[in-house]
Image (cartoon, rainbow, N blue to C red; front, side, top):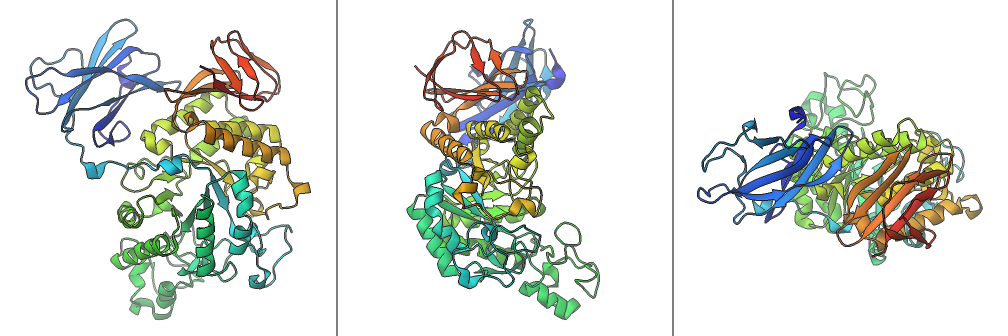
Length: 576
């Protein structure tokens, strides 16, 4: 038995309240080491009765580890528990709070782990509507110009080559004009990059958090956008830039004008006086970005100001949540307060962080509901687009991404493979659309929320900023209609088959750059097969299932083998 691999702690995701009456427990062991894993549990104040016993389920596996999971319930929700391991040779071992034990200490006070109490106020309330959503990101200046009367000066013609400074006149009216297109596509959650008053085309240097940039429209027009989205069953999320402001924000302007005497000097991080945008002797976003001075969210006045900003747009305008820019560079205490503020206005509103790495410290239930899942993106880039890793390493990456979080959080992660901050996925594929299609199939059939960056659905490409921010292609003769139809098909399949949202993920076959996996929710099951090769491939493993291919709508029998053409994917609904 590999003792080094065995691991458990009494915090999420290894121990957490699934609901007010259920404790979800998880433990890690070495891969294929155990014949059986059990959890023994009872009330922490029960000194008379024996421990209850439950066999744990293997729910995830990498090349190194197995992860077992079980849900347990005790009256009054006060838990004491320990684990029992039986390896392939029949050796037995126990794990309690003191570590690994070859024999249990006799008597009523076995020193098990303790989850002292499930407090109802501490139970994380998952966001069912977001778990079932498909996200569509819009970079407003490049989506659609619906009102030429508010165009910026020196506007470029739509579709001209982009630079970091160029503006094209996309606006709120343009988004309203294209809502029928988005509804027909099948998306039901729009994420807008910043639309507040700002001097740049990207608007991440905010001048006024209560006003819409005049080149985009007005607060009243934004209210109309939100209303029209909601009428179509589409929710909408704004971008919160609370890590830094623009250098023309009132507080920083006062600091520049009054220096040490400014009442806003503690809103920022001056590194000497006089504060100067030419010397950039103050803390900024990234390194020396003069137009983005970093805010001190530990300052009570700063905290109060931005909590009110967050509340205003949810309460008064009716947006359905926030995406938080540079979320991981703002203190946890601010986000805890932000969550309480937003949820008090609308408990269904969601809070999604821009965090480009593992983020369990933000996703334990008291701060964020989700993140932009960049680890997922890079796994897809490396396997499907670049082919730098094989199917086993790919599975390791996406599996570890699953086991980092509570089940409900995993279902809410925004599974993107492109955004305004990265090269487009088709560019990463060197323009090879078939590779992108395989990645799309995995994206829509894996756990989490599928995410579309505007224009990906019609075959837009482009490298890093600014080339990933080109104008949306509206000329249908220039659109990749085949890709667009596949997006529509995948969205429809996901909405019609809830096992793709709530089902377990189980790899069935990982060999030779071919991946076959199952999504099963206990009632319905789907099998997804992807051949990431330029050659035909036959999967010989016997699944012994009858299925319907949801793409071709033809019956497929898996009793003998599954033949896959080069770069082919199959989405198979298991027939009972």
